[in-house]
Length: 381
Image 1: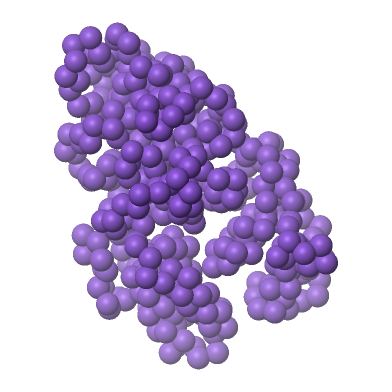
Image 2: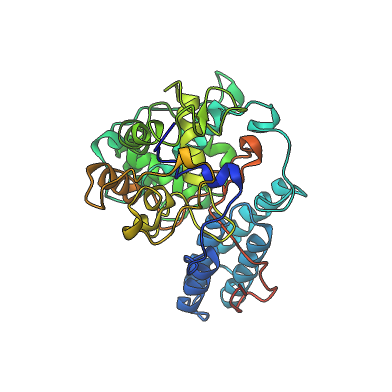
């Protein structure tokens, strides 16, 4: 296709990197910033850092071990600090589950795709994990997300088993944290709108993904509705077209363009959202939305910070997709990126290998150096 915008996934297939530029803030930077602000004499402050680490680096064994070292220090300051004791148990369970698996951003590339099936599309279970990870936290939440449909599965699929909601309440009462030792807390929690219950469960079950996966979001949250209606139509007509990097089969391209069915759409979302270049540039940059390659590669040359690699075939010369940064299509995609959870991507808690050997960052960890064994020292980058 002549004069078509090829910007988004050309570098995925061709393996060509964008030109060098100052590195974006990495998870290591974020950790170091939080570490610097942590009061090393306050158990609660140290706990807050470790809890953030246990969620932010949920599949990084080194950082989970580092979080435990922080918690050990908190317990030396206050041996009866129950929050720290419970969190250590949660981290131990996560480390045991990780076992000897290849790290998410390790050097080995598995040959299978969704959960080892050879199917290039994400599974229904993985779709739910993505919905949970992307569901917004805090008070800023859309009307659609407030009315999202959900259900609680019963334990082990047994009709007589307890629902995920019942198990969550029992778990919180057992821990007795955040006021759950007060009988009125349960009643107050159950009176909340379902979306607030969901927000609480996503936050508090970061260390119990097995239970959290029994919380099923069964309708598209707002992030996906916006992707379907505002982002994908632009992408589909440009670099995801059949003549570029789209198609109905994995051998044709990494994006699936001939269907708007749920599995295809979530696979497309994951490919766009989780792609990370080796010099730490993202198609979707949640920290600096206007530096997203998804936007940069569609701008006129005079307006870009990062240039798209040269296209060898003259007939496929790149024509800017957007007229400028005030182009309605540019603004719509930028607004969508700004609405996503951030400032760094979430961990999706899934194992998925993209088609054609494309590398995705499913943990939100990005390019991350191996940390030192001493918890009080900054991570070396």
